[in-house]
Image (cartoon, rainbow, N blue to C red; front, top):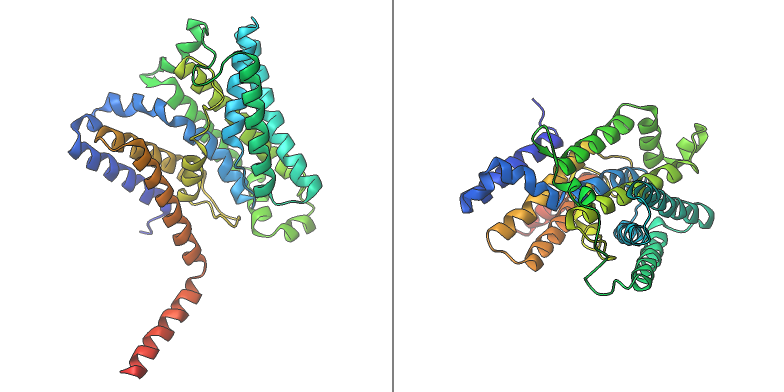
Length: 330
């Protein structure tokens, strides 16, 4: 039986939990495993649409700043006395707008998505700081005073599962359906593999990025709402540490950094793998700085491995040349 990458990730996830459980038995407690996901589940929520963007051949590194902007905007609207239902809807629209702005800039300028989203990273981050300063929420205090019904949302359960985890499962199912079971997904993979062929096939090559980056923006807004509910305050730096773990999860899950391939289920499993890695390291007393360094090292290793797998013939030829030279020298 052929071992696919998703099954390998599942095995790695189980082994990771067992390893940390051997170091700290609390890691094997089912309730701890379920409810600790609220600490990192937003990594998966934003990594899923990011995977689609990478499959198309693009990238979005502005999602952390989008989360911060949406979070502080939600706090400002609450502070102004707006009903939470309207404030949440407008927050989702703001996230969508941020994604559409990214897509429009990429479309009309023709500049690399990496450069465009690097610029909007600072643009949205600066906007978040500006709103935060106007609201008087400087430093790490943020905007608090949210209704109890809203702050309790992240701690509620459904069928014994925490609501953020259920939300993650629903988001995963949605992206799996549109990517692997719908025409949208077939067009997406074709666009990433061969944009010229996609254009000749009369696909909406220019319109696809608007949908993809818009989805990243909406997912970032959802993550902002979950984070604000979980922490009980809106801060401009809430998404600051989510970019690298989300990118790691997308690449580790099977997304090709050059576009054309990827797996939604793989990204979901990789997000849990990265999240439990951070959680497990903290539980055994490893500082956050070391945890971040290990996540970055994991990303580098995965990217190198993917690059080598794409050029396996060149690697084989180079290795044969090295062996032949050693044989001749001997």
